Length: 133
Image (cartoon, rainbow, N blue to C red):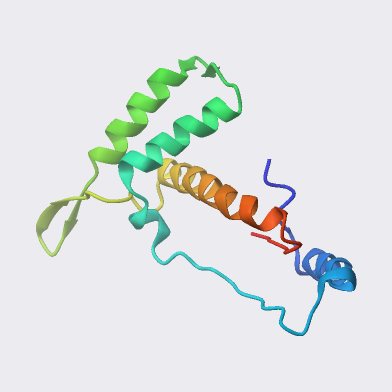
């Protein structure tokens, strides 16, 4: 799904850059990288679950295994909004993001970033610029 904007190796990146630079490299060309600090703990919970729902809709899935999409979203919302942890003997309720190391948090963050990147890609596509994740 994101194969047009994803490179899987250094070699592939260099190959794509060489191909692109033949017609597009200019003296004023800028290269930049983006890193989302603490992504898993910074994705807004509601928007993250909405991105998961949007991804499942985008994939035209009615259910995954025996679970209907509606059930997956309800369970995801419950897990994201009911994460508690202990630190220095105190218990805390996590109100933003999800638990580090949780497969659900990884999935929600990936969906959230996929749709965030789609907005960037729309702007870049008609400008002759190149975008990779």
